[in-house]
Image (cartoon, rainbow, N blue to C red):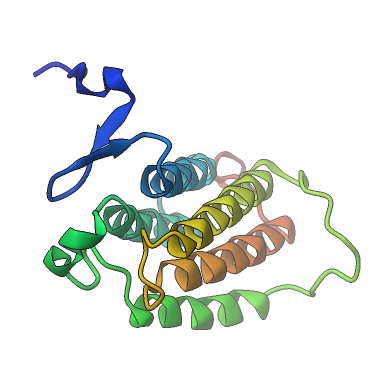
Length: 184
């Protein structure tokens, strides 16, 4: 199997459950930003050990972003084919981020000034992930305004909470975090 198909050479991309749209259409633009967020979280994950609590949190978030991407990569007329929690974001997914944010927030004193990213590599990677998630969120707002996403979709709310969680995780990692290689 070859990686390239040449089908996108005309500037279009295939959608989940069929159809093609321009690569710069609202759906592909939004799921492209979501894919970047997956990669940014992967960069943060690469900086921690597999036994680190943050590692498992980041794997979970990366997998959940695949659900976001699946919903965004589906044309509105095929949304009925989506499955809650697998290819469609649910309210429960949004709600599950809130106790995690609350739990992590209790682990550090909140900053009293603007944060200058870069305290350490993990926190910096999480701050990059946060900004990419915020861009994905803005792209999804646009996708909603043009009818690509339904107003009742939970995608925007999920990305909003995820960006908050990334900020919280970054601040947590600034306070007492040591890379896995330094803990051995």
